[in-house]
Image 1: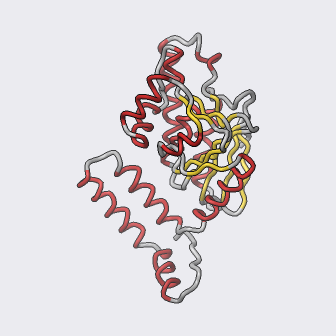
Image 2: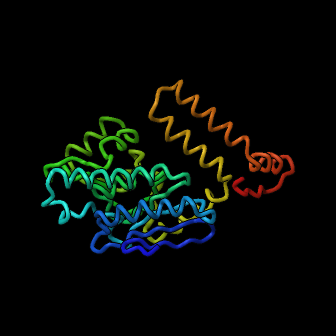
Image 3: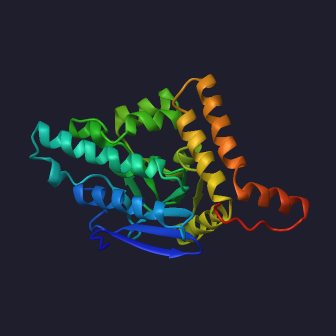
Length: 259
């Protein structure tokens, strides 16, 4: 399928997805729809076991939403766009393969919301993170108010959301928004290295792990433990589980097939 704003390269079972929408790789309806379609394709692709999402250029990961598209929308039009956004971000968050956001430069508004949908985030040392929506007379509408508080806690989340001011990559690391900060020259190489390590793990176990973590984080403990047990049983029933345990006993590298 042809994509207007997304470029995808697949190597070593890792899909590198680059948002290429000049200027600033901003999000609009077409980008959201393309992200949803691409996630569906990558989930069905057995040659892909991990995904890296980044932005084109060196200045921005995603510098927010395309305000030009939004400024004249009526209430119903904005409701429709919000639903498209929610579907797209939820698809990224819940795809059954690990996703790494390689944040090169600015992650503003919807760009930060997109990064929060990834399982892991690596930032270049020049990256900046912000929720500027309050300064436009609105609030984040792509899950930002909810996902950020799970990472940083209520106090820090409210500081970011209420003031709308950018923070540095180092501050984002201190707040657990990102997992690692590297120089911009090393960003993609580091993200690919992480993704290739994840791609070597047992695919079904990785899928069940992600399901247990993502679903369990939104329910009470007893329900979460039931979810974990069910996910564990699903992973244990695979050929890969037998291969992994046999490889450990035989002191060799496992060969996972996703079965």
